[in-house]
Length: 479
Image (cartoon, rainbow, N blue to C red; front, side, top):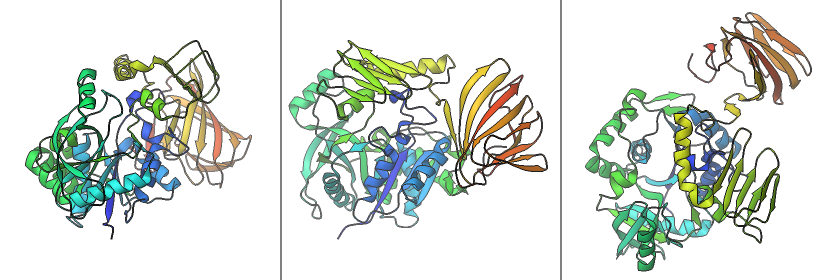
């Protein structure tokens, strides 16, 4: 008989090492990096395939809430809850939110904690490993999974395996006490671990009961425990999302479950397993798992290569030609191009920090900006004008708003637009247009059954996105 499992999916990361495809406002877990589904959707499917798995609990950044909800709806999954973090506080507080949620219903509820940005190829092996971990969790252990290392990787944490533990309810896999953790060793140390044979990679996937996690958190990090508990008790529900009290939660220390609990508890177990795992933390790791040609190259999109080997080439918008280069990463997007040697992937985070220091925007978002009602993207911009493409999903509408510094012209490309200007409502079809004067309250809505596409031409002295005064909004955004 299989135990009930509650998947906890952590989707709060920013994925800076996969820039320029991954951006702060559209991170890697929301992208289809491997296959047609996004990494978040693949993780949800993986959890749902486990015997007796319940609806997942998601923890994500507040800025990603509508994208996360939409991706769940696309694969016909209704989460038990989606918790929103106004600011990331790492994995220990995020897991605590889910633990408090489950504890109120069943203090022995079994939690399977899954990062939303991992790849696992062997579902059967993963299921077997989870069953072993559940047996350990039922004996009040905190269980993680160890991946047998295939190379002296320096981007992963390592776990030293201790004595075996006999779990009466466990299937064929074994569980072991954890002797020690090492966080991302240098290459010489990693090579020694590989030769020793008593070490595994730390997968970042965990199984325990809600009560065991909260007990160990209170024992080792009472400050995090008390703040998250207070924020959770003062939570509010907003359009189906759950928001812990922001004023309380922002004061919580930021710490990972590894540092806060796993490295200090005496209740840690590791289940060594092989289920085709990758954390897809860098372009190099994505190249390693990608299908390749006879020269070791992966290409996507309109890519042309000559005299090139062991490289990852991804073209999103236009022709990319690579000639005479080996071991390179080339990523092309609408507004940024990355060319990098594969051995330098760990330096990309520093490059993103430099973009931020120079007040660039390319690390934050793509040209196409997603909103709960649809999306918009810039086409052209000059002195006192800006041109955008806008798509509004069927039945959705923008906020009732006005602008102090710009007027707008809207031209319908396809679909039907319902336009409100002050107290007047008008319908516009394909090839029709309208003008929104500066300072007039207005709203755009799609009353039809197909997406509404239009061209917007803005003109005025200031064209920034912060020149919006909202009077009414269907999505609970700031007025």
